[in-house]
Amino acid sequence: MKKGFAWLAGAFLLSVCGATFGTLKSVASPVTLRIFDGVTFYDGYRMGNFPEDAATDDGVLRHLTSLYAVRLTDDDIAQIGDSLKMNVFVEACCDNYDRIGNINLALVPKGSETYTTSDPDVKRLEIARFITPFMNKNKKPNTVPYNYDIQYLAPILHDAGLRAEYDLWMEMEIFGIPYAANTQVEGCEGRSDVFKGTLEFVSRTPGMDDTHGNVLVPIAIKNPEYVGKNLNNYNATDTADTTVKTYTFEVPESVDYGYLVLITSNHGANEGGEEYNRRWHYVYVDDELVLTYKPGRNSCEPFRKYNTQANGIYGLIYMRPVTWQSFSNWCPGDVIDNRIIEMGAVQAGTHTLTIRVPEAVFADRQGDIPLSLYFHGSDTPVVDAAMERLDVALPESSIALTDGILSFESPREDIVSVEIFSVNAHRMHYQWMDAPVDMSAYPSGVYLVNIELANGIIETHKILLTH
Image (cartoon, rainbow, N blue to C red):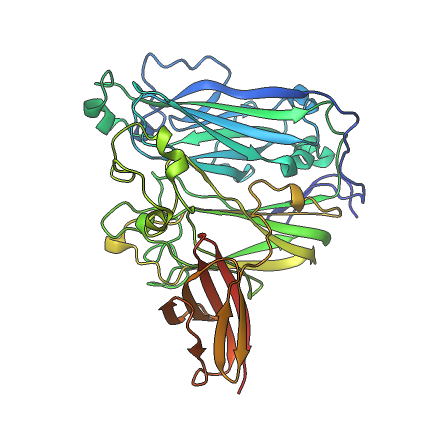
């Protein structure tokens, strides 16, 4: 394995020496490291044009009115142990709508006092995404918390090879717009401040030892609202009128353990827009289907208390889970999931990830799916500590294929619906309840069966049909 840190084929390699990740030296009380402390974000469409009364002498690098950065010092990183959580707090100012926000890690050439996000030598990874609620700043609660377990990030922050070549900057981005609040919220007339943001790390001390044995490959980071052209079927797709996108990446060194971190959220608030239609997402790695999911929570009711501004999502009364599941891709006031795709041992070389959302419509050619993606591999497993990892639970449903008849069973939960797809994501069959399906006339091949249960869980089964 090579020592040090080197760029290879558009990727970057954290020094690989066969050593294990740093270990906790002793048990101690947690320490809180505040990165951003109530910084004010302004109208995102002002770009770099800050108001005259904006406070900009606090050591924060302000790329735009919606995107700020702070460099992590050696002392900061020294306080981070192998237990790492991240808390984000968003306080309402003069934007009373649901907006997208995110936290990024930027790797900037060593010693740079500043940087631009368009610099090809700067690589950025989105590590967390969230949606602000509809908030009226004059009502309580006026601050919403977002909490993440990012223990997996600690070995990266401590990697000796990475830090020898790069400074690590944390970015906070919230794209807000004040125009509705200027007339709808008391005290907001003429104002351009939209939110206040706080970001903190919470970790055990003492800090970890230097780490080695990581391979980190940034692949894609979402475009902000003012740039657009995220995944869709009209101007950001491999094939026109089809929502499909393939990302190619180079893994410069073979690793024993590799995984991909994928973040997507569906947007488009127009009539019939993608925000209000849950779609199946299919993810392929090296042409093999590895993940299927339909975004959305079982219920958005836990976040109702943060939505203090009247809006068209929450309404006046409690809604049942089945109602939320019929239209909401995400909840205002909630995090967006990081989806962890475990790859096992990964060989050096070229790899691909393809995402398909075949039923997406993008009515009136509006909306998109902001997508971020990166690869992390090492000689020791870290995926069990990954932020927002989807819980691994025993399946609650089972299927059986006998003489071309497909039957279903779920001893603990009622089956709400059944969908059958070809391996290329073409829907072949849909039905309510759990009646058997005659597949004897279907062509031979691999099929995916999605079973929706009464508890909101959707389980996917793979079957091979032969004649």
